[in-house]
Length: 209
Image 1 (cartoon, rainbow, N blue to C red):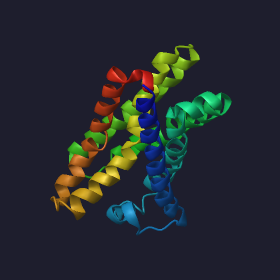
Image 2 (image 1 turned 180 degrees about the horizontal axis):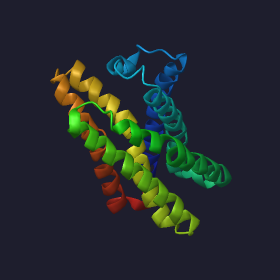
Image 3 (image 1 turned 90 degrees about the vertical axis):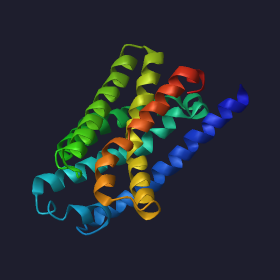
Image 4 (image 1 turned 180 degrees about the vertical axis):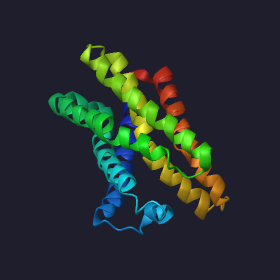
């Protein structure tokens, strides 16, 4: 059983590194550039103060979630630093429920890929808010097992920020898929596989989370 536990610890560590890497890229937006990375595809919206405000609110809350979430799943860290685990958990929940989630839901209505993209990101944002609220509500009621399950689902949706960029980069740079199809599919591929993996982990490897 111990090798399995070590394997899961390594997986979560790799997810932490991926989250930190993406966070480093995201920090570049605080130069307030209007023609870098993601914003290059949103030139028709950079003059919209509501969308730009939502964008910066969203990436700020997303940074909090990405940098605090992975630590919650490293068993040794959780056991040794329980008080810090709780503090980081509160930051994670607040960052999603009050910052990244609502702004992400607003931005979903401006998603690329037409109504397919809009529907995918709207559903993702709604599930992200719901699963995070359930993670908070279950621990408030001292249901630790249910809290763990909902946190796993919540972070699977948080990690969609990583899988989204990996999918867009890989499908355009290496697979050379049609750009319009990538835009529409990313609204679904970025998070559905994550949730499937989360449910498999909860069903078959719950003791190791």
